[in-house]
Image (cartoon, rainbow, N blue to C red; front, side, top):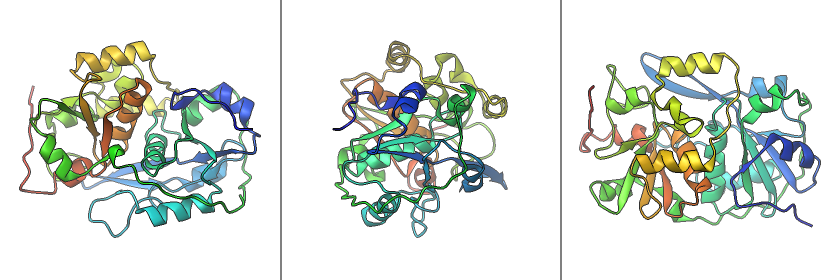
Length: 311
């Protein structure tokens, strides 16, 4: 008998604690980190953090080493269906497995991205742990250092194009009245502050894009937080959970992102954009998808325009 779920893409720590031993459930840890070298952002998996302590029964998926295409010119681009299926099968995720994903960033970034990737490849039974590992730990819930060895499963990818936007899709969408493009990064990166975008080749944003920073999905008051302030918040160790559907609805409507429009979210490399997409799916936006290449791809093409919005 399958575990019953509501339509929300989120589950609470209380729900997970209650269902942690369900045989159909697979918990996936996707914690990752980033560092800056020569003014550029670099992503890398945090497997050592996983080994030091994770939610009991959780397996580890490397968003960079396992699920990003090393041959693609755009960093962190999602792997093709065949490789994705191999990773899922190794993790014991089959066609009927209920997957709960979490990370340790405080905000759902890596976890939102794997939720999006599974959804894109046709797997509906996936949820994101609201608050992630930080919320789990803040409530005094147990951790484990045991690394599970799940039985091999069969995962059949079924690509759903309406979950992913290509560069060509975004080019065609610019200036179209029925479509809104949402930049999910901080206001300073959106405006083009600093000498260079940390996740791209140029400052600025896709022309016409509106800015709904991913942190605003936690609390609209965080919409103006700078990158430096964000780092201080993360260093504090506090946990974060999504805002209420009512606050999220007000947030997006105030930016002109309404349910009747087609929505394309993006960020630097598809993590914060996935967080924005997650919020839209919480609200029931049916025509919303992620631009996987994001600013890393757009900014690398000199033929494509960039818009800067100085204060």
